[in-house]
Amino acid sequence: MNEATQAPATASIEELTKITSQVRRDIVRMVHACQSGHPGASLGCTEFFVSLYFHYLRHNPDFNMSGTGEDMFFLSNGHISPVWYSVLARSGYFPLEELKTFRKINSRLQGHPATEEGLPGIRVASGSLGQGLSVAIGAAQAKKLHQDPYRVFVLMGDGEQQEGQIWEAAMYAAHYGVDNLVATLDYNGQQIDGPVDQVMSLKNIKAKWEAFGWEVVESQGNDLEKLVPALGQAIERTGNGKPVINIMTTEMGYGVDFMVGSHKWHGIAPNDEQLASALDQLEETLGDY
Amino acid sequence: MTKYTFTEKQDTRSGFGAGLLELGRTNPKVVALCADLTGSLKMGDFKKEFPERFFQVGIAEANMMGLAAGMSINGLIPFTGTFANFSTGRVYDQIRQSIAYSEKNVKICASHAGVTLGEDGATHQILEDLGMMKMLPNMTVINPCDFNQTKAATIAIADHEGPVYLRFGRPKVPIFTPEDQKFEIGRAIRFTEGRDVSIFATGHLLWHAIEAEAKLADRGISAEVINIHTIKPLDRQAVLQSIAKTKCAVTAEEHQLNGGLGDSIAQLLAQNTPAPMEMVAVNDQFGESGKPAELMEKYGLSTNDIFEAVLKVLERK
Image 1 (tube, each protein chain N blue to C red):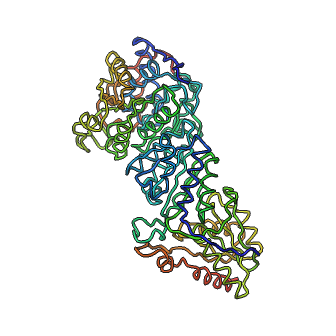
Image 2: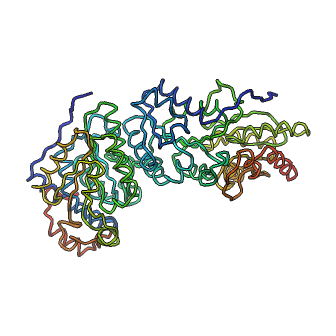
Image 3: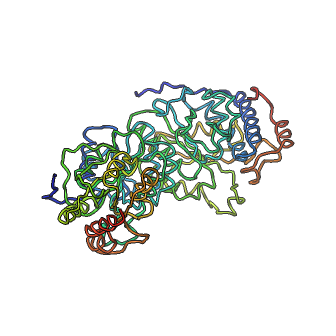
């Protein structure tokens, strides 16, 4: 197989905007229903997930674990599972109704993504940070070995850049010229104990990735008008002998005024009143689950 | 009664290298990853013959485990190679999340296990690896005893769907299992038939158990030597059948007493048919530098230690 046969959905910016609002509603409703989970970076990465799954990713919701003949996505910072689950469900991987089971007993929607319960769309467990980039690189190299022309995408957090394994993987991908890979770094500047700059500064993260031999693209992650072309640029730069990373600036909690910009909403759920306030700010565009 | 002898010594890691090379020739899905120990792991022949399927990862074991998990998704069968210490403790969380919990078809191949690593000392002499790996759900754990068995095990695990930990060692040890013996994962092998005591041995300790059996026979004691090459899943039936006959057990392994084969068998017996039991293993200590034979002696892992353990368990019957 040498020809790309899966076409991306390529939704318009207007359509993507509608999906984004609905996904944000899903996120706050999911974490509210189980009174746990990670709304902050889920909301911050909503435009990214929607752009990827509804515009660029050549994928088949009739899920095939091997990922042969389609693009593959890996989530390394597994705690932002709410946004991924919502986007997978709204892409047709599993029934929307199942979002109700998030983090509840006997659910396929585990707190952090897992394969054991067989949730379509998930290819490896993540949650313990720093591991997803290595897995994505391995999957990308396997695609090369099989002459499969599709790409591999992976999302990482910025706090996660503090894990040593990220840099083992960074060195490796550049050494082998793994150029069918687009990594994205969610640069929201926040982690559990506070601002990343105070907890453990990344200093010049762009220079670090460049020094490791990666092609770097920068983007604004909460503006679809800017993010969609930037992701396109990142994809265009594949196939040139270097792995590609998209350093994407986002705001944690984006779209909900009382959550935006603070690390405090990294891992707590809104109460009833806060949920009502959040939903007032997010238009129901596609129908709640 | 078959008497076991040997004419040649070879290291078990070379059995792994030979098995891997054969797999390279027979199974195009097999790929190999190594963390800067190609020579030590005897992966050089595979690398030479199949350079496009060999991935040097440098001194970065955590990345190696993730890469292997990723490669397996696409249907490849990755074999990772490094020392047992760096194959387990150093990368436990990577194995736990990306391989075991994620049910990935990765073969973690680990050399230089135990005190027989010798002069490098305790930093490298891992004695806790079997315990760590057997605790992981979905993980199969194998510790072969000689060159032939290691080669056969290496070939066999490629056909097994799921994560496997394959443990072998550095020193040259007797080759005493048949070259053509079929390796069945989870199926124990009875080496001698006996009435008085069951000796369950794994890895390098199997040869010592066979030597002990001969010494015991001279004293009129009939020992049944059973090779437990697969620590998990344990061949429960083989163990229980032997104990039903002999009513007592000695286990022998180059591993900590806590968490090893002895633990697994004690658990099985306690739940089914409690019987007197002695364990030949390292007792809550780190190793040290020295020659392999000296270390086996000092840490209580010699033929004589098995012999003495049998005498002790017989008194408790």
